[in-house]
Image (cartoon, rainbow, N blue to C red; front, side, top):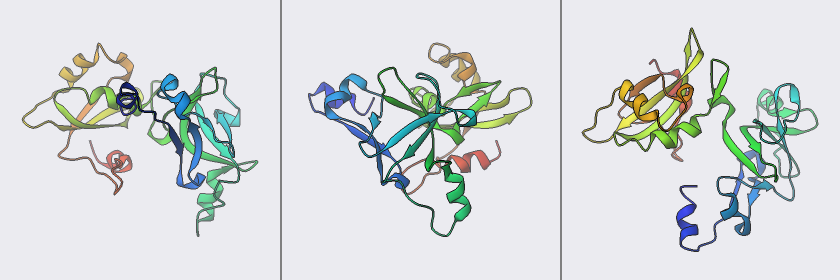
Length: 218
């Protein structure tokens, strides 16, 4: 929404598509004529794509409930080169591709992506989506960059950890960050731990390498 809204404010139409390399790449489409009224959504299934949102046990979830996005259609890849196990893991019965994205569908059929399944933090039985926390934490004046990952915890199973790059000359303590979060995030979603780093590890495309952050000792 933060990227698209300035275009709408200037009367510039903006749409978007969503997908992966494995989907060729377009699978979900938000058209120009519907984008402003559905900002935050990635749209509806493309004309050539079937779409499901699936919960535990392979059962479709109801509208508004989170589930994994499964896709099927002629645009879907046939397999990973030289890696039959990865190919088998990627597909559910019936030829459905498991995207690894978790999201929900509203009552008008629009899809909203919440996060990657592997990035979701399950703390005390509650699902915490780093993609929801990170834009909020990035507004803190002491934070230049931030990524949220889960860390094991004896009491809660997992807790969210804020890994931050500080703004020049800034300092930040966990207690101060949590106090700032009180007006912005539910208490169970707030970071339980804070880690300050010089830089976030990123891919050539600029995506944060969260698997490296999770593997690093806190």
